[in-house]
Image 1 (cartoon, rainbow, N blue to C red):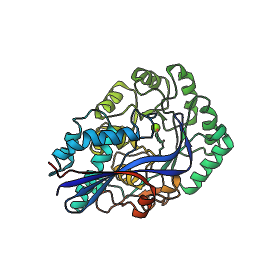
Image 2 (image 1 turned 60 degrees about the horizontal axis):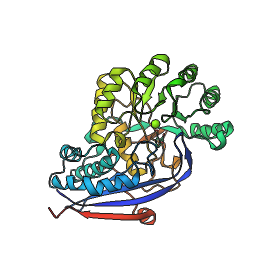
Image 3 (image 1 turned 90 degrees about the vertical axis):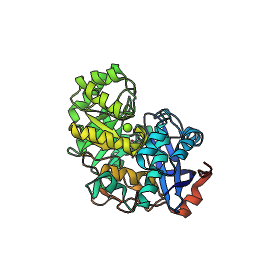
Image 4 (image 1 turned 135 degrees about the vertical axis):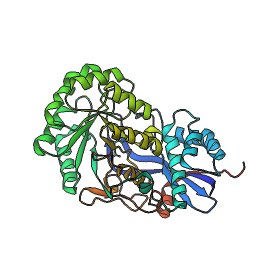
Length: 374
Ligand code: OSB
Ligand code: MG
């Protein structure tokens, strides 16, 4: 099997409701899908999780698209006759950074490679769960309304979500957490600041200790290792890192230095499924809990996340919510909650396919690159 061509499909899916964080308000999931087509006529799929502007990390959709065309595809071309996961990883890792662009491409190739051998991603990963607990990430409501927050959270709890994550920022932290905690005294609860605080906010972070939170996610800027270490020593709530963890090495540093006790794993943020597995394995060996983060993925990215989250070290519920949490119409058959869980796809590869009519309707640009010239 060889990879014959790569097709990029750009699209923007409208979100059901705007998603507000300390970074921005998202109204659409602006992304592209990578389709890796083999000489045996199989298509594998990957999704780019970059946002449309560099506010979460430095990557953004147009930039990921460009680096794919200019630098990643020529590297993939060299291994197209034997696109095994390790060879693809080594080829793409000649390029520094651009982890989200690499992940979209390497996942599409991995999906094609697995489909060719009739093996599911979950099986390839040694994932032992058949379903994974679903958590949900709750944005900051318009006008910071506690009432709006409470009704949104009540809706998710009614649907069966097993863990609630509140997005926080200065001015929207202790009060919303107190409100949710006083109504739902036992629901697993955590917060995510997306780097919105500074070292001078330690006293404020300590106020969260009374609410029995699972964790505080990425309170400080991604490069503030010292600040995270100091904060971890000052708070009883565990610190979890998201944006700071971009590789196995940064994960090891975070654990050794005491900057985090829990790790959020997102394949797109660390450069791929294989790097995610390495991080998972190290954390499992060290008894460090991990969970699978989310990037408002469509069903394509979600399928890979759910397979990953089914690995044994993923002991906390992920931001792996049902399709209906995000979209009126997903681009795959929708992921649905079953007793607060998502079923792990068991078909070949990622186990889901895009619905061609939906793709056709949403696609705004296509790039098709033949790899057969070399
Ligand atoms: O920080 O985890 C984050 C969404 C986009 C970018 C960053 C983050 C998020 C979320 C939503 O929190 C997670 C999801 O439900 O996909
Ligand atoms: Mg986060």
